Length: 123
Length: 358
Image (cartoon, rainbow over all chains, first blue to last red; front, top):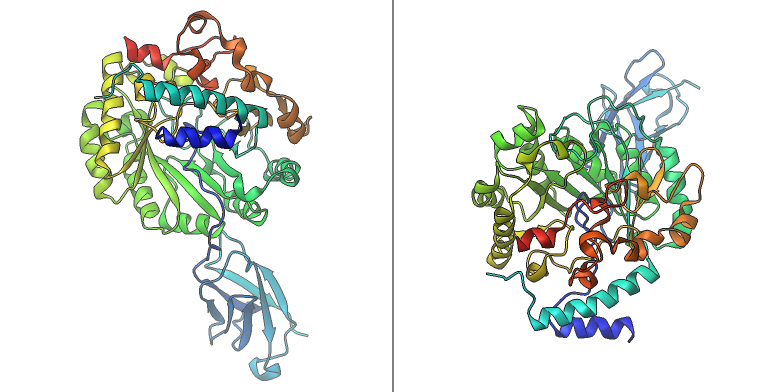
């Protein structure tokens, strides 16, 4: 007898044919589809090689958002997704913020996304 | 009250399911991967089957090695349908857990973790979810005095309850609380149920201790037969009440209590739908099973080849038809209980059905 017919008969008797997958030391079974997890907000700061904060740097996480650093070099990008693991810091205002800085890419550490530090070098 | 004896309808269903279980074994479609990520633990529990302790002599498996094994499996499965369960020891002792989780997520695997809650703050919960966590189980063995006695730590209960609060506050995660029922917490199960419901907990799994590891040394951890039967009835009544989802753990054929205390009929899925990777690379059905049943090692074997071509003792249980199982009328529905209940000489340690019949 095909398994699908056996499953149907079992259902007619009032029982489930599903196997017991949550083992003694397992967790509740869950499978796809599931929503893309978000990291909350990615926060951090941008400094130069002397560790001075740099204002006006455009910090972007592809697919999530962007922010400009403030006077203290701080930035915050809200509701980032798990795929958003690279931050790009770009100097878009030239010498206005004390120099021209080369763009910098940083990989977000999932254990430390609340305090990402980016050091930019002058061109 | 459910009787230990089987009614006609249930007997018919069990006969049918016995057939289905053989189909499942023949097909052995992989549905779950257990990873014993560490033997380190921040507790020293009286009932630990792993005999874990704070400074395990066995080093953690490098994440890269585990992921290499996963990559051997991935081409052959739909990873979206294969759950990875990370255990220990205490899995949260691993600082790279989120990195591993993220790699699993990228490969399409939902994953979960079993934890004692000591290290599960709201911050940690957030980072785990951000790394793709889908499912989590927290161990809470009743109220504070009993839990701390078993866990041998005066802060363990507070941390476990804090962990539960963090989990309940997180949307979209499958979770449950797992409670080891013993002579100390047995009489307060009703109160503890109310406590969990008041905390917003939606799912509760109860298990009884099997006599391996440290648990074998402490008789107070074992329930006498009368209390074991009462436990089954408590679970059945709680399920009918419908205020919190309640299941007995996976082990044991339970006679008339089949499908009364669990969502599914009994059937050990170790080696049939579940593979376990132990901390030293040994491949087994689940990480609770003794070393005598190891089927290979990820450091010397291709885990997919092992899954496809070995695991005979898990998929054909005729070897277990000996001792008290040999003449047992329930053999067809049980086939020798869960694999984790066999000692190193392949002898059954414990029969749940016989315990209910006493």
